Amino acid sequence: MEVFPDILERIDAGLDPAADPGALPGHDALLADAERVIEAWLAARGEAPEGGTVEGFRLLALHRQGCRGTPSFNACRETCREIVFRRNTADLYSDDAAEALAQRRLMAMTVKHLALFVGGKLAEAGLGDFCCSSRPLRAAGGT
Amino acid sequence: MAGDLRKVAYYPGCALEGSGGPYDRSTKAVVKALGLEMTELDDWNCCGAMEVKNIDPQVQTYLSARNLAIAGDMGFKTVMAPCNGCYHNLKKAEHDLAHNPEAAGVNRRISAKAGHRAYEPGGVETIHALDWIKKAVGEEELARRAKGRLAGLKVANYYGCMYTRPRHIFPEKDKGPGSESTLKPHFMDDILAAAGATNVDFPLKTACCGGAHSLSDSDMSTKLVLNILTTAEACGAEVIATECPTCHTGLEMHQVRAEKVLGRRTSVRILYFTQLLGMALGLSARSVGVQENLSDPGDLLAEKGLG
Image 1 (cartoon, rainbow over the protein chains, first blue to last red):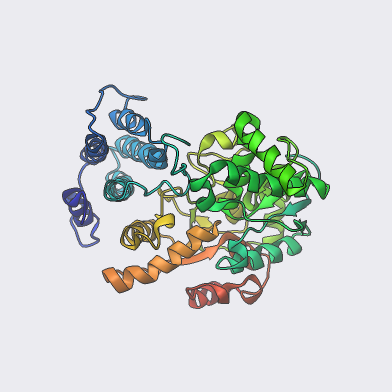
Image 2 (cartoon, rainbow over the protein chains, first blue to last red; image 1 turned 30 degrees about the vertical axis):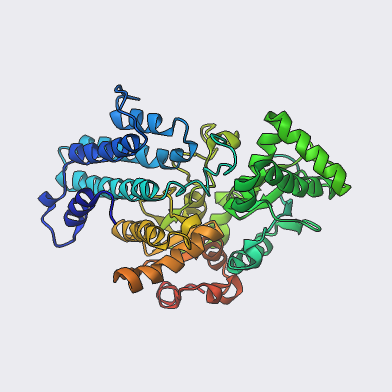
């Protein structure tokens, strides 16, 4: 079962090589999708977004909140930061449609990865706990 | 980094004696070709991997610390671990012993029971194969030896998760120019660029491949890997370079599975960076273990005049 089917379908449709460039969501829409993914993670933990931004981005604030008490969620820290980087780069190339689209495509692939990873963690809480963010099974809140 | 970097202790870990055999073979071949020296640790043991760490992290700390103690007893100040998991665990043990008195106590207690010296933090530095080649040889020397043999090869460098995470166990990283970045690692990019390769702009360098769930949640792993493969292709890569046996096996295995289960075929090839570097140094594909990989990059290598 896909956890974020609408986001994944929209991105896949936009990334289809045969698709019109306009089919790919804009960079702010992609950023909003990424925020929605993390919001779903928070909601699954019974939390509401606390608001605020980190380095000017709500996504990074949401991710920081999502890590609290769950260090394994840090496994998508770089993914969130990459999304912000690509969003800024796409924005920077607002006068170069081809480069802006290239950056937006990379951003879309990264948002897709975030959706798959968080979707995986929502389906299986242990996803990500066994590698870089390993924590002891017998001790709650360990690192 | 401490001591004479041209001679280090070698901790292969379990994977390089099994599914990561081509990584072991190619690492040894590259080390020989570059005139470096590495001595395998005597009587080394498992680093604790993920399995022990998730049951009892302090036993994992002890297991890794024993390997560091052996390196010290053999007279080495530096131990090189090519596997991201081993590298991560040895670094984590170093950090835990320095910052967690309970872990240090457990290490001393088990070491005494086992009848060997307890490792004290600060005695041995753990480095990755990437760190070693970059620091001990450097890009200039690599470029001189490689003679641009990887020219025309477009590479996406995939570092996986454990080379840079969690950041606090890698105090030498993120120190500005010359140091590795945990956010956007580049040592593999630097090494392969020196050998002539063209590194593509790849946004999923450290993204999770679902490696630990390859068997317990195969579908999720396949989807994560497929996104890494398709993103690499969309970035123009012909090859994904890896530096971890778990990542490498996962990418190869799920590339096959994605085609079988999801009907999605990808053609990007997956090679260890040591295999690419070895061929850049003029070694044959066979001598760097390409034939032991799950996938066959023979046609691409022939097209590029490699191997």
